[in-house]
Image 1 (tube, rainbow over the protein chains, first blue to last red):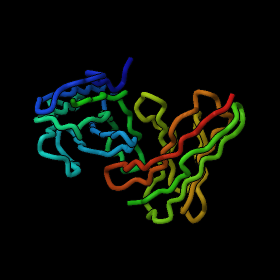
Image 2 (spheres, rainbow over the protein chains, first blue to last red):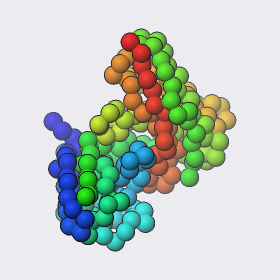
Image 3 (cartoon, chains in turn purple, cyan):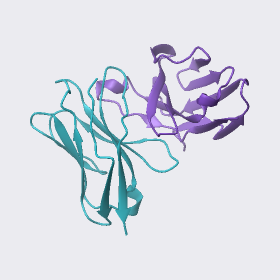
Image 4 (cartoon, rainbow over the protein chains, first blue to last red):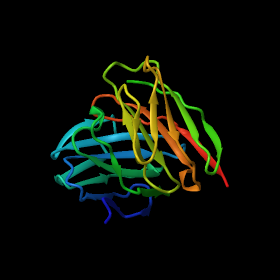
Length: 116
Length: 108
C-alpha cells in the first residue's frame, strides 16, 4: 500500500502550458505539503494545508495554486510554466504540524517536471 | 530558524557503525532535531527525532549534546541500502527546512 502517492511520476511540457500534479495520502493525516527540489538538490517547502486550510505559503509565484478538496488530497496546479519550474516536486503528509516535533513527514516519490 | 551545518559527504564500510554529525548552535530550547534521509530517486524518509535525550529506534540512534548545539546520528551497522543523503533539521514552527545534507557512501 502506497502511503503518499503522486501522479504523474514524470511530466514533460512546453513553456507557457498549464499542468497539474495530484497527491493523495491514505494515512489519515490532517496536514499535507508540497516541496520543490531543484537541480542542486535543495528541498524547499512551498505550501502546507491543515484540514484543507492553507497554513504555509512560502513566497511562491501566483502561478502555483494548491487545491485541497479534502484532507486526503492536495493537488498542485501550475499556470504558464517557465523553464525555471523544472524540478522534482514532492508531496508529503503528517498528523499535526511537522514543526511541533511530534509528527514525522511522509513523502511521496516525487514528480519530475521538465519544462522545455 | 535553527540553522544546521553538516559535512558534505562521508564514507563508511559496510557493516561498520557510522556517526553522522550535525551542528545546530542557534537552536532554541523547544526546537526538535529531526533526521531524514533520501535514497536515490525517492522522496525523503523519516529516520529519527529528539529534543534533549538520546533516542533509539529500529533504524538508528540519535545522540544529542548536553548543550544541544550538536547531535550525531548513529547507524549501528551500515548496509549498502543506507547509502543516501542524510538531512539534519531543526524544526521551525509548522515547517521543516531542509539543508544540503550529508551524502553517505557505503563501501562493500
